[in-house]
Amino acid sequence: MRFRKFGDAGQAFPIYITVVGGLLFLAFAYFAVGQAAANRNDAQTAADAAALAAAQDRRDQLAGAWVQNLLDPAKWRAIFDGAAEGIDPSCWRADQLAAQNDATVVTCAPDGLLGYTVEVETNDTVGASIVPGTEEKKSQETATAVIEPRCTFELLEEDAGEDTLPLLACEGKEWELDPEGPEELLPRPEDLFDVHLAD
Image (cartoon, rainbow, N blue to C red; front, side, top):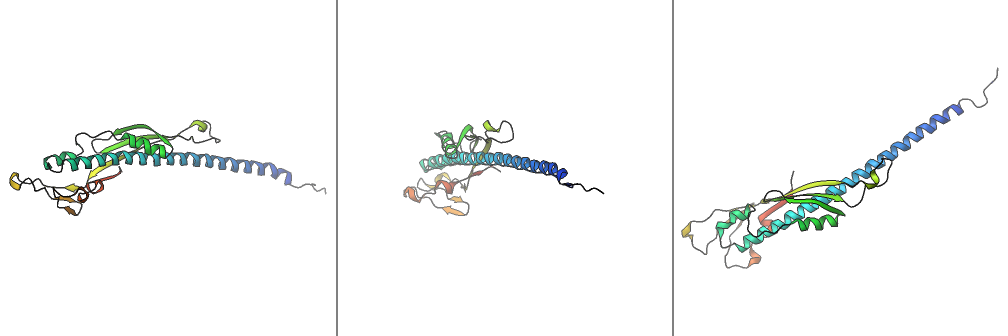
């Protein structure tokens, strides 16, 4: 009886090479997916920050308009509804925050009177990988931030007197407003309005 000199070792080697090659391919594929996911995550972070910044700037302007019209409560409702006069566009703040997050604003527009929707694109690409075309691929994401009034009030009767202002109730805190008091004692923008990302 003659014995084979090398047994089955020679037959197993090609299988081993095939398995290792397949595992390496899967590893590179998962790496490419991870690169793309990280890039999309960066884009979403930039979009969220940009939308919030634009909405916060509009909130600050609305709060400023309320202070300017403190002695004219008849205008308060329009201000809390976002329809104050003389409000400037706020997309410049979206541009700033997107740039700080290494992205560029693609579109920015008001979402009604109390919100902003912003779309951004990352400045960095996904990067080279085994997936063709990723070298130049950039991620785009969109976010919407909304402004919600936090206060309620009831207009006083006409005979209440010019020196009397309505009681302003802002989520559990009541503000007894003094027309002649210092501005530092007035509610701050964050007391008057809440800003958050849309669900």
